[in-house]
Length: 215
Image (cartoon, rainbow, N blue to C red; front, side, top):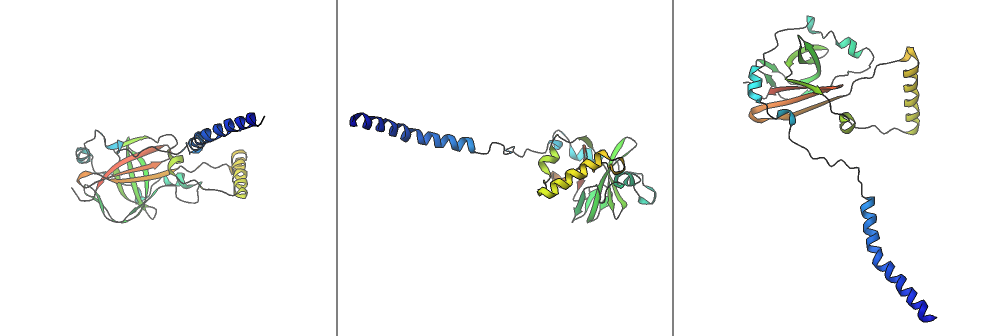
């Protein structure tokens, strides 16, 4: 009887001893975060197959202005918001688009269409100070804002308040408000003193190119 019990004990001990490392390894593999965004940073897609210098030389300097340098579309964009819906561009050194010299300062970048061509308005203190043409406009990739904009963590009370306000805004006519468009801004150095700027505003993003030295 003792021999039988000893044999059973040795078998169980062997199973436990040899199975434990495998079990631990399996646990490590299954509990390792699988939802991490491991996408590598790729080269700028918007610069592929584009002769930046030729494109820069071919684009004309805008020859139109706004009356009193006031953007007529701003009222419509801001009538439902308590803050500016445009991305803020902080410029610490001058940039150039041909004869247009953009001085250092804080500018609200606003996309606007004129004669079937898109432009970015550099606005300071509510006035249009500079106008630069866009060379490309395209849809913002799906979930771009979700993946790139910081997500605010709310307490339970704040969540209840936000859900209540959204419910009121959707169901009570007098309280309905249009959502403010998401915004984002990218700026990167290119060869030969060129600067690429991408303005994200709502469902679209707008591309423009500037220079650190006048050409």
